[in-house]
Image (cartoon, rainbow, N blue to C red; front, side):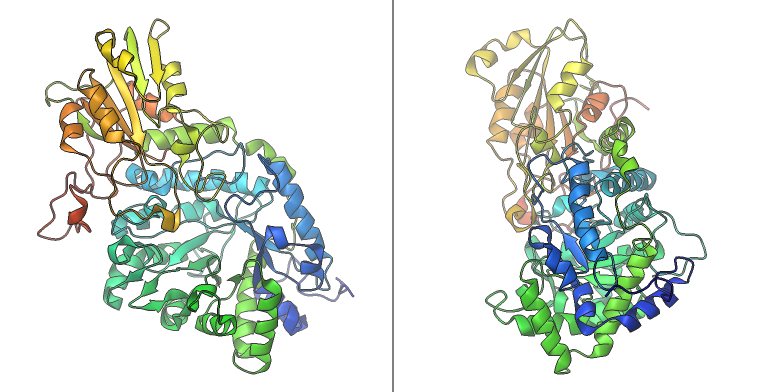
Length: 608
């Protein structure tokens, strides 16, 4: 039986949020409460999941799509279908749908893909990051999604970590500045807004999720999901400050980290999740687990699921990213509550937090997609914003073999130029991981401009551009005909643990390609990577110029804008560039600090 609207405070849009939360909570059965705490993957989201189990949230894994190259309108159709099923349940509580929109709405074909966070950290431009958040929010809402699992505010301590590119950099102050993404995604709260209380400005905004609480960027040897060995004072000094900045902006949700702190899994750490985040810092939104985060609390993974649930929920996890075996989760949760192993007060607290965010986000008033936002997806203004971000993210590491003879900017009217390298004409490589799929892909995976496209557009009509992915012996033999070469090399896409790398060499024989070309043609090297990589002496000595372009996304023309001199280089290293992996991790504040290029380094191409 659907509850009548006339008698419901919770359905009254003019009533205070807390009154609506209290009223709705009082009407809910235990099954309905546990359903709200359950997040499932879209592939198992059948109508009965909502009508029989009262599921409160749905997400998609990276690469889990309605169908290949599904557009934003197709996503909206799917999500609205889930929403209509949820609204048909007894209390009509809407779902909140979440996605990893970590550099634009990157799962969706045709969306604007912005530079990954490591590149945005190089810009040092908090307002730019806020504007990117606002643009991302529009494209996310256009696809029907309400909740972006972003930003990652990990403070990066070791580039061997596979999630380097998701961090804004190694310095807590820099990461704090870049938390402006929250105000872009959710909107800017009024001055009197209470610290720690969730805020979403309106229908053009999304719920943000700051992650991964806490210390994920500080694990020993940069091992993903590893152990951060630190005192609480060090956590408070290095890893917690960005969360304070996010709470001050009304961030609505926080995601727990897979990693451990001094041997205790964060998903099981009541001290950090409840006593610090919720009680000391005053966070009033909800805390969500990571994907199968509870399963990782037992060995073998998921083997004692009842124990995992009890430990995590009692530690402070409010919503569980199950994501598939939700019937087992709900049954085990029900047993744990009925046996008193999870107190009813803990359940009520979790559900209260979830409902608070749903009311604040306006989901009860406007549960379905606003299709008028569809024209914003991949629009000209957003692509120009991404292009601006690329320009500002580029870090010039070398410009000319002699300081008094700068190599850049390049002559756009040169007679003949060589463009080569694995990354010169690969949009997937340019975008990196978390683009269309979890790990990322190679090739023309979405709509965008490769570096080669951009170079061809930038040069003069009389300039001949010769492109070879790998330079042939014949081409190198005729090298006297080239004015210069542009060599783009770097890392393939990766994500999370698969990105952990103890060697950090340029893949695909990148060093050999650079050296072969640079020995005979004046060469600009453009590095496409999610972190610093080993730069052999031959690369540093033989090249004329070297640019760190990070993972720039779909708008490759931003690179051409700068190397051809329409704009100057602005980027500064967000992370120290090491000489040898044996020296890692580097500490910019240590007496032994001896990087190849220090934190904050970045040249200009034009004389001041």
